[in-house]
Image (tube, rainbow, N blue to C red; front, side, top):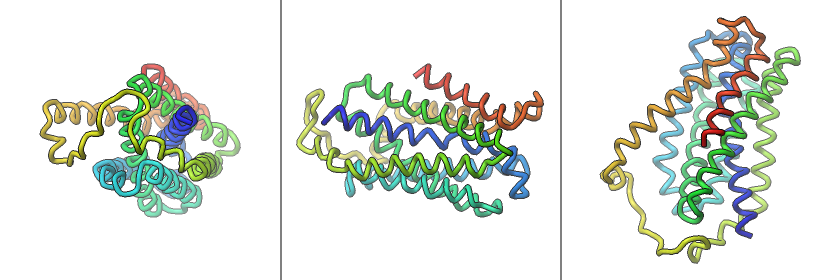
Length: 259
């Protein structure tokens, strides 16, 4: 049962990675259909990032109230709805609105599953967890690349990724009972459960502020590269949108390999 739960956690983290580079890989074509400019992708990315931070900071309360399984399920559903909404979008403002549930879902999943694995599994599983994020982050642009090579059909790319996430949500719904396996303690490792620590208390822990700063720099660089890499290949190297999307997946592949 523990192994099955771990597989589901890995699957959910693949789902977390799937949308991460979609916007950047599709934007060169999307912007023309919705009458946007190149730099407008930055506004969408900014709202996604801000929503991710908000949901991450709220994750502790949500986890204690609803549990990791339910938070993960509803976060994946939130991301699914946002991606399917992207596929039907006809204007830039609608994309800005959909960026909110997309970011909220991503932040909750990341915080919930990282916390769960840290509490209940050995340290090696945390590395594997983020490797599976890399699988999702590599797969997303490749899916988009396929559809961009089919008459620049970026909408189908978003639908495909949205349906994959919907399938993951169905699996999570059917296995919610598995998350109760740790209610009476840890299976791997030992030690009592620690009391809940508030965000204010956590930030006072030595090293936390520097870790947050390092994470900000790292994630900022990662997001910027994922967002603009495909556009760079198109503008500077003259490659097709489909090829640019496929090439942008190499960045995520390098990150997952490093993890």
